[in-house]
Amino acid sequence: MQPFETVTGAAPYLSRANIDTDVIIRIEHLTALEKDQLGPYAMEALRFRADGSEDPQCVLNQAVFRDAPILVAGDNFGCGSSREAAVWALQCMGVRCVIAPSFGEIFFNNCFQNGVLPIRLPAAEVEAIGSACASGEPMTVDLRAQTLRIPPGRSVTFSVDAVRRDGLLRGLDDIGLTLQHDDSVRHWQDRDRIERPWAWPEHEDASREAPPVRPVVRVVPIA
Figure 1 (cartoon, rainbow, N blue to C red):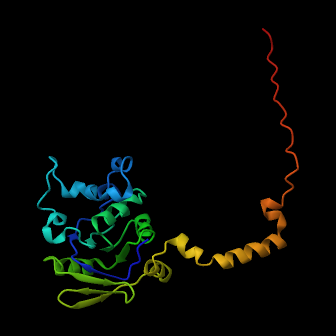
Figure 2 (cartoon, rainbow, N blue to C red):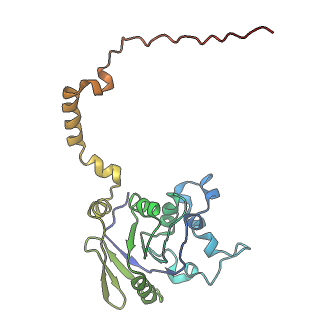
């Protein structure tokens, strides 16, 4: 996955709370589209009117915020069903970082597995950031320094779990991080095969026949 160090750009503010994964991407789009084709359908319930035309009142449709790499959101963003495609859809829109007071827990975890940085900050701070970026003036997210540089020059610190931060900086999901210890894992396996051979299937006697299957015979009385 793409490493994350610093991202600079516009940051639209969706202040509405409880935007769930079905709002981020509708389930019906996941049956026919590849993950890199979800962008046009991301947030369509907010971006489009009933007749299919763009809603000019939606901040995501403002020219300055198209393809914005940072999204400032309301409380409990990404709640609802455990839909990893919600993160894929945001990525297809160009989003690399989401800032909100809180997140749906599964969505929060899925972000780290796909190279998106979710940042939790107090609600008052999120609102202040949204206001500061309302004109489209860019802000910068620096993961290595764990700071936000917000116009007109204010700095805000945030914290990220050390293991997850390392994974994003190196472009590694949980599997990738685990494979960094492949030599140690193989060393442990080799030792354990010697100490506990019974625990490893390849040490079983392959020539041993399975016990015969005894047929079940039912006696049906004749009327």
